[in-house]
Length: 308
Ligand SMILES: NC(=O)c1ccc[n+]([C@@H]2O[C@H](COP(=O)([O-])OP(=O)(O)OC[C@H]3O[C@@H](n4cnc5c(N)ncnc54)[C@H](OP(=O)(O)O)[C@@H]3O)[C@@H](O)[C@H]2O)c1
Picture (cartoon, protein in one colour):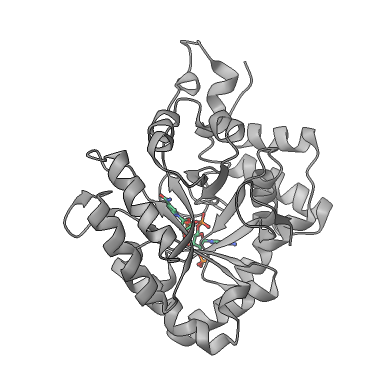
């Protein structure tokens, strides 16, 4: 496993994170096996959110962790708050952040969270309220680090005006299929292709300038949640290159797809969502591969992108 020291944050965290969004589908015993397999593969970082299974993912993990014998302090537990699909609203109010944090701690059965992220912008957010909530959580020892998810540069600037703690993570969608985080840089000011559309106000460079580590979510998904592009019939050219490079480096195709994310000099983490131990092992083989500059471009172009 390749490890990372996070600027203004923890040291020695794994480049691959196990995302627990799909954990509600597992029994407690299966969840314990998934956590143990992760540790055996060198993963020490787990991602949650209050909305994953409406709290079920955190509950399953909290029930499973004691079965593994893994010490709480040996792993990095992160969760996100603010999404309420049940009441159809997003909420970053002080009251909701504090209530969510207590709920997370109780479901995970822990007394501190390593990182709390604001999941997706609440259209009614007030940065001063968020600052107060973070101060309370930090001084009570309930949360060590803070971050955001799906947040733009100007929203981060506004938050940073009031929030005292460094915002060290931004979770953003990034994969060979969903590469809009980088596409626009090639086609700025160009009317002939949608690749020129600036969809996030330059969040990639903003994060790099401000020492915010990007966590790439859904690294294997087609679109939002349309399935995995590896071995998918709609991606023949991409699968051909994944297969060729997989043979060259003696790793599975999924490892090459994840290695493509890890090769970016922004030093992102990739959040793998598989709940299959063998698939996770395949994915972790990504950390054995250092793609060449040319191989990185070959994969990008095979995913349907083109150079000006
Ligand atoms: N911040 C946000 O807004 C946001 C949004 C979405 C997700 N996330 C985070 O990102 C994590 C990952 O998201 P995701 O689950 O969509 O990511 P993903 O890793 O891109 O996709 C996982 C899916 O791919 C399948 N898969 C993996 N390897 C495969 C293989 N070799 N062959 C066939 N299928 C394979 C998995 O099935 P198997 O289980 O059968 O392997 C699973 O259904 C989540 O758990 C969550 O932590 C964050």
